[in-house]
Structure formats: C-alpha cells, structure tokens
Amino acid sequence: MRYYAYFPGCSSSEGGAKAYGVSAQAVSTALDIELIELDDWNCCGSTPYSSFEELASFCLSARNLALAEKTGFDLVTPCSSCYVILNRANSYLKQYPHLRAEVDESLAAGGLEYRGTVRVRHLLDVFVNDIGYDAISAAVKKNLNGLKVAPYYGCQLVRPSFGFDHPEMPESIDELIVSLGGEPTPFPMKTRCCGGSLVISEEELSLGLIGKVLKSARDNGAECIITPCPLCQTNLDAYQKSAGKKFKTSFNLPVMFFTQLMGVAFGLVERELGLKSCIVPVEMVLAKYL
Amino acid sequence: MERSTRTDSFVEEVSAIPGGEGIRLCIQCGTCTASCPNVERMDHTPSQLIAMARAGMKEEVLSSNSMWHCMSCYLCTVRCPRGIKQTDLMHAFECLSVREGLSHSRTLTPAMYRSFNDFVYSLGSLPEAGFMTWYYMLTNPLRGIRLLPMALNLRKQGRLTLRARRLTPEGTKQLRAILNKAEELGGMS
Image (cartoon, rainbow over all chains, first blue to last red; front, side):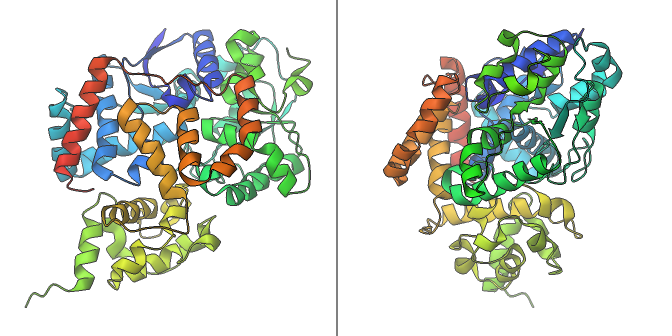
C-alpha cells in the first residue's frame, strides 16, 4: 500500500467534477494507493488570485503546503490548475528569498510554518510513474479492445514543466490508453488550450478553441476523449453543443476523466465512476464494457 | 552618474514581482506572440507589451486588455528562447493594473476574477454555482438567464451543488489571519 496526502481541489471535491474525485479514489484503491485527504485544505486560488494579489495567492498555496508537510507524504492533486499553482508557489518560495520572508510572516500570523519539503504531484504522475503501466495493465478486467481514445492533456498538466512529461508532445496518457487495451488517437491538438475559465468572461473566443480541439479529435477518428483536468472536461463536455453550433456540426464525443476510463477497464461499477454526470452520454461508446 | 527615469521605475516595479524579472532579457523575437492562441483579441501582442513596458509606457500597458486575455496556457513560457516567464509577466501586469485601480471596459475577465476571489477569500473554497450567479449578476444578468438551461442540465447530472464546502471554524480563522497579514504586508500586491 502506498500513501499520499490528497488535495482534491474545489472542483473535484464538491464541485462540477465530483465524479473525478470519486473515480480517482476508486481507481487508487484498486491500485493499492491510499489518498488521504488533507485536513481543512483551502482553495489554491487558481489563476484569478494570482492575477489580482500576488502575495496573497502564494499564501493560499503556502497554507496547504504547510498542512501537507505535517503529514510527511507527497501532496497529490488530480486537478491540473491546482497542480501548477501549488508547484509554482513551492518552487518560487525556494527561488525568491524576499517572497519567502513575507509568506513566512503571513503564515506565522495563522500559527503555521512551512519548511519547504513537500513534493507536489499530479495524480497521473503517481499512476504512471510510481505504480507503472505494467501494474495498471495487470489490474485490467475488461480490456478496451482497441477503443479509439483521444488523449487530451490540456495545458497545465505539462506546462510550465514541473518535470513530468514533455510540455508539447507528452506521451503518458497515450501509453496509459495502450495499457488499458485502447488505441490512442493521433491528436495534434492534445496540448492546446480549451480557453480555461475565460469560457465565462469571453465565451465566443473559448468556443472557438473548444471547437478546434473537438474537431481535431473527431477528424482523427476518436470515439471519445479523456482528460486529467476538471476545467478541460467541463469545457469540452458542457460547452460541446454550443461549440458544435459555432462550427455548424454535431461532435457527439463523450469526454471523460482518465480515471473514469481506467475504472471502466478495471470493471468498477457506476457508483464508483460517476459516468452519468457526463453531459454528452457515454453509454453508446462504452456499452460493450459496462 | 545614476539617474532614475520613468522607464527604469516601471521595469523595476515589474521585476520585483516573482517571475517578472525576465522582462529585461527579451530580444523581441516574437516567439511568444506567434504561440499565443488569443493574440488577435489583444490590444497589443505579448512582445509589444514587453517593448512598451521597457519604454516606460506604464499606463498604456496597464490599461490594455492584453494580459486579461491570457489564459495561462504557458505555451509562450515553455518556448521562450530567453527563458522569460511570460505568463507570470502577464499576471504581474494584471496585479499592477489592479493595484493602480485602472478600469478595463473592454474585458469582463477582471470582474470574473474578482467574483472568484471574493468567494475564495470569504469561504476558503470556491462554490461554482454561487460564483457564477454573482458574476453574471454583476456583469450581464441577461446572459446569466440565457445560461439557465445549461445550469439546470448540470444540476440534473449532479454537477452543480448549491451548498458551499466550508472549512472548520478554526481553519477559516487561520486562513483569514494569513490573508489579512499578506494584505497588510502587501509588498507585491
């Protein structure tokens, strides 16, 4: 059994990507991993806080890092945005002594201190590097038998690089798909931006980006898409109909979290997967595995 | 002889923000601009913004819409041959623009970020339903109403919880103390 401190992030805990959190836990259990949720964690602040209040945004991360340090485990998150924000704070605190001094003083006001020993990991990194593709293959009960899956990495899993996979041509999800018996779709847009949270404030612009990603996946023969990011999943799934309208087409491509597809291949049940929460229905594509 | 000019002081201000120091290294090759998925919407391209900042055009830079169109995809950052962290530079411009109290009539992104941050500050977590409702009420209620069918659909699929996740009372107090201290120190914001 391997143990990790777990930072679900707002979206995967009580938010729109709850199914991600649920399936992440279920798949981890199947792989002999225990994700121990960090007590009383707070929102990482994501991009909006870093765009308004630099110091406070680092403090939001620092509190979580300080809490994680007490556990002695690596801090693992399934959310690509939390992954970048926490990692960025972690490395900048080492790199900039004047920032470190101010963050230390702020943390002390809350009775906390951070020594800088935590490693921040993405859940995908833990699966493919700590557990490995062979062990994942060994846990497969329902081989995906050539299911054509587009691996959508999005931006922040691989950029800016925190040492996990290539920033523009990553392979880890492709290999994961192979280890489940599926066939990764060649997918030139696999690390292009979906618009992130700007889908709220600049919807037209984001729909253009979402449409391009969906079109690339479909034109290359994908039957479905998997992603390691709550915002990517929401944009490609919930906004798929609107993007289709803009591109005068109907994409009809189910978009799942990579943990959900792993769960399907591991033979887990709906309660542990949350597939019903997908807006574009997955049943047609997954019928032979469920 | 040492002389402080308008140019120097803005570049220094930007350089003092973590990740902003790279502004001095730019060779104007334009790789960031060519990599940006949103550049057509920007008043000035990322490389122009750097050149303007170095020419001391503080107000023009900070009141432009450019940085608010950055989606933090980090393509520019990983491609820059000088190792400049452009995404961080964009964040630095955003923070300075907020600090200067400049208005941004041509983009709703600052209002969206502000709604987000208000929730994070007061709750320590982000309830998506509350945040979206608050943002559309402040900016464009009509658009909010038109999005209702999608919201209801998300709700039906169990993806729009109305109840916010709360920290323990001690956790909330602790976080508040930390953030208030940060605001008081305010060095970089």
